[in-house]
Length: 137
Image (cartoon, rainbow, N blue to C red; front, side, top):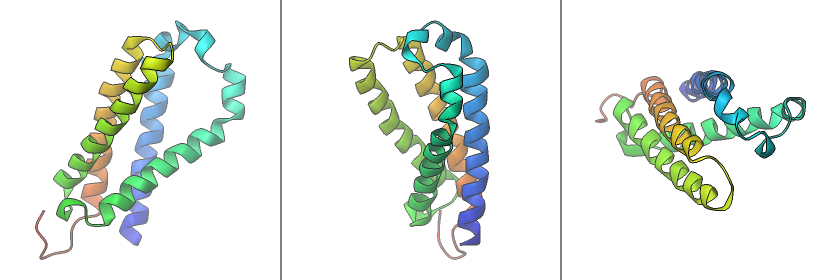
């Protein structure tokens, strides 16, 4: 349980920081190109708790799937889980792109950065929630 909590906290801190860096710094200009698609800054801040809750649920699910014995554990298993979950997310982004007027480059950047994010999250979780000795990775 201690490793689960530590993995959750470490992965959450990374996702929170990466989300701010990606969306608030790197992609800021891309979002500015389509202001009609986004809430105002003040409205987003009033709903910020939903970002925190959403990210916490994502990390909880990731750590729970991993801790349930995903592929024997270890860093490589964590990375594999991250890649698989990001493939699912990319599929969802593509479906959303078909029905909402997001710029294609936002879908591309989001998918590439999401893959990077989930590989790092997988490595973090895999390093912290190491398999028990005697198990193979």
